[in-house]
Length: 232
Ligand SMILES: Nc1nc2c(ncn2[C@@H]2O[C@H](COP(=O)(O)OP(=O)(O)OP(=O)(O)O)[C@@H](O)[C@H]2O)c(=O)[nH]1
Ligand SMILES: [Mg+2]
Image (cartoon, rainbow, N blue to C red; front, side, top):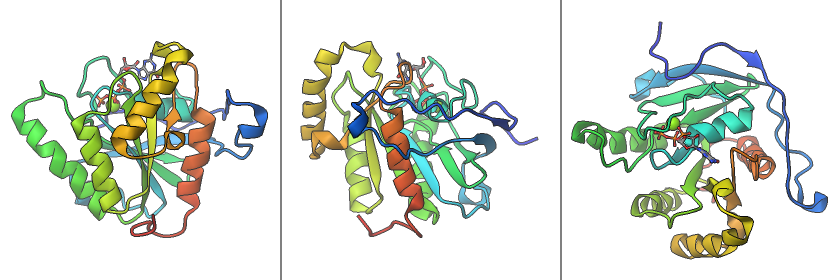
């Protein structure tokens, strides 16, 4: 059996799109997720699944909440393994969604306590994936609303722009702060990344804040035809 970092078995999931925005601002046509299944874990390109379906990958620093966010999108508590301990996801994990596209949980960066050998292999592993994966339509880059984007967040964001890989910026764990505190933090994070505050999705896996909007933007990425390289 393949080494697996996630729960196994395919199960039907309910779509449960929630939207906390006024109805006029909610996306009425969000992606409905009906099934989700773990496919494989990989380190090197020859281990990636031979599947040419559109693919969206989730990146961010270790422990920021990537795996939890994917579970929230697919409405499964444990398909993608999560942990309080940073560095839980150390391989590239592929999940097939609705039998028609792939979500990819990338290992987190910036975990200072990881062994040097692991830290040294993470950068090349992620970079090789991002550069070589033909069916990659874009990245969901996850940052923590409570903290300024880290130097690693900033360099990944700039690198994605340079490589013209479409990216959706997320500020997660919003439930840990009162809503009155969100706006100045979003403004500051936007300034640091050099983007508009409106580009961010403020997210919480606990309250499902931002889920609907993210499903809409992920759908846009998936529906773009062919590789997105050079198109944004
Ligand atoms: N309150 C709250 N906690 C969250 C949220 N998202 C994630 N967490 C918690 O943050 C911790 C890390 O979550 P993971 O999803 O495992 O983080 P990760 O980015 O996949 O971590 P690595 O795999 O180590 O890179 C867990 O204890 C989660 O329960 C959120 O939106 N709100
Ligand atoms: Mg993880």
